[in-house]
Image 1 (cartoon, rainbow over the protein chains, first blue to last red):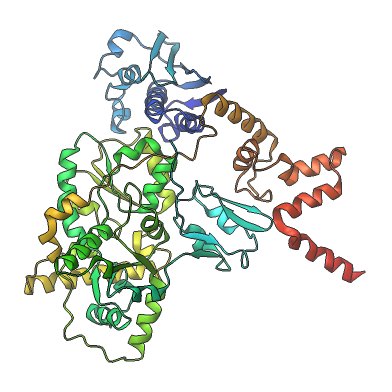
Image 2 (tube, chains in turn green, blue):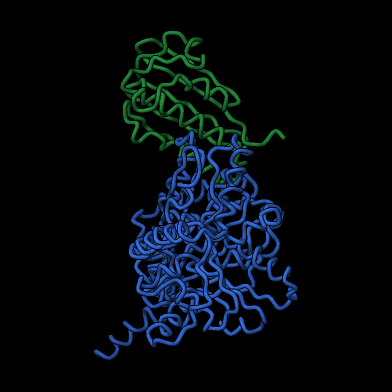
Length: 140
Length: 458
């Protein structure tokens, strides 16, 4: 099952649409609540990242009985140093974004913590592609 | 794991219901459908919030209660009344008069439920310290909200405070007190005067415990009528021997919005009204709201003052209850009395724990993820055929609900009037069959009355 959502840079007010819809679908297919929580937290964080840094983005979701694959692709400034961006507390968010309560430098590390696989590619002044995977069957 | 069937206090009276869809449209969990011209309630989705009861134009939604005369099966008849009960009456009537009326009606003992809040406020403070890593802790006070979280937000079940509400605490105390006085447990009947349907359901099938400590439930509107009749008729009442309730003044406000949130430390929020609750819980579940220590959530607008069985306007009730709390504060400064329930704190500490609250998701299309995903894909396809205007003519509240009903085999695509028109147009459905489907959903009556008129015109 596949879905696609658009994200407008700077539109924090409408961020969360993708994560909220994906959450509903995962509940409907009877995925464990703890696994759902990790996925939606990661996706919401990714949506906020696009809002905070990029001009335009899209979220592509593919759900199979085994796993959920999510691609978040944006057009924007890109990330200069991915290793640095993965460190907790590091942020390039503007003061305006921080005033809204975002940009604490927890975005990417939080996504990594909540996903089973994560890859990120970025080209400066072009954009960033984030891909993450979560398995839907509890490992316990 | 098999789950016990949940008791519901709300029932449809088929003699009165004419399938008007008001309830179906307003139900926050989409638990209502119309079949054969009558509303039906999907029991696994119903949370007993009572929104349907409020909007029904012909009082076809019934709130089950115990017959008043059952109180006389007991020698000791205890009325546990909520602070919202005195809030129904004009302030010209004193709390002592209202208590005297309850005695006059046949109760041997009368006790305000919120006495239990005096105990809970300290017990929950302790609980919050012990569970400081769980954020936010969610109050277990409103039974409709506990059920809402169970069916719609299963991941948040672990955030619900596993302590019983003031009603159970007061009932536990009163029973124990009478037993300590040597009363035979068989002779004790504890009755709760309820402003809401969810409390009835909670008493009849409590969440996280085997049996409720309450024996019966009487609806507040019935008591209101009988008490007001006594007051208006100037029935001689013996108020001499009646004592003022001894609960803290802040506990009188416990069931109002912020009644709990105001009493705890840290970042505490209060949410009322069921759609607000759903919106808040959605955000909470995605971590869009963080760093909150405690949340009080109630299903009714203005919390229990807006309880569906209350008679008085909810805003007036709030004002009366707040005023009474202020008067009670003055009374307590002049007459320092101790809430007798607090003497039983050790006993209550042990008894007020709820064993475990289990999630029971109503969202899943199937237990098996494979099958569920398959069904969901089919439902999405059905939805793409439907008009998306949520007209309700199919007997389901939304096109999405119909699409899910179809894959669960509780409805057919031809239930949609738009689909039928198209199919009649292409010749794949006959007009007679189409009319029959309409009758299946809305009853013979809905269409026959038009046919009769047309016949008469001829």
